[in-house]
Length: 364
Ligand SMILES: NC(=O)c1ccc[n+]([C@@H]2O[C@H](COP(=O)([O-])OP(=O)(O)OC[C@H]3O[C@@H](n4cnc5c(N)ncnc54)[C@H](O)[C@@H]3O)[C@@H](O)[C@H]2O)c1
Image (cartoon, rainbow, N blue to C red; front, side):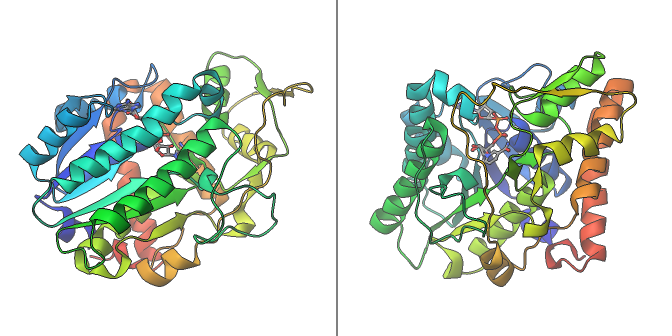
């Protein structure tokens, strides 16, 4: 199903050099799309984008999304069929260190993408990625719905809430509800894991960095729970959302959550011990004075809307998610020559599992 939608389509992916963007790029290539990536250099070294040599597969454009006029020129020139906006300053801790950069990239950068979309004169479906952290966190034990209050205490979360406000304003002000040409929806996903992430202060990258050099990993908030999911889960949601937008105006202007079922909300400690079961002789220690910066404890998403409108649900359980993640890193640390093959193999495998579980998007 996905292939029939994306084959030979022109797709702009912003943030293609980052963790999620690189996986989306690889997936779109498998689907036969012409991918035009727009981003700064990869945010980490190593990076999935570089080790999988994805630059050779696509049109790789290095452009700051704060350069609004250049973005407009690019969108006018390409006239994309689909846009996935993932470029962002994506880390809570970095947002405390560089709040102005975070606000600029996440809010003005998103506004610049919306402005560029205003200049497209053909049908185009755009998925703008924000975060589950756009919800004002009330430490509820139940999941946040798309209509719940937006807000954030740390600069990252607040900037993502502000991006959501900007998206809604642009949709109401400039993009008609019928969505004759450009249709837009926002996507809010929780913490993702998967191979190829080496970002600072994310738990899986911290583990593999430490364990691959026989170090002990330090845990800051071991009991915090997060809606962990494999990176391919929200990406399948973004693809379904883009398909639905292009099929009809029904979901135009809507926001969608993409997260695991509540039973899969696990703690940092569950995640680390799960990863450890796939590695030999690894250790961790819990830092007792580490919670000096505010980070929300409990955060769950209600994803009924994605199920209802997009037929989307998660494919893998917690154990499958951890195994796929560990397999990727082990392949990297043991045999870094075949990363692109491993990435595409995992996408094919994930699609097969989804097909087996009856996911509509995965059917042939
Ligand atoms: N990784 C997660 O767990 C997670 C969870 C929820 C939401 N998100 C959101 O998903 C999106 C992708 O996240 P990620 O983990 O892949 O991020 P990442 O940090 O790995 O990648 C960020 C990408 O944005 C690009 N970028 C940053 N500033 C830019 C600028 N000014 N101009 C152009 N490009 C710029 C980088 O070059 C990179 O390609 C982000 O919007 C992030 O906030 C991520």
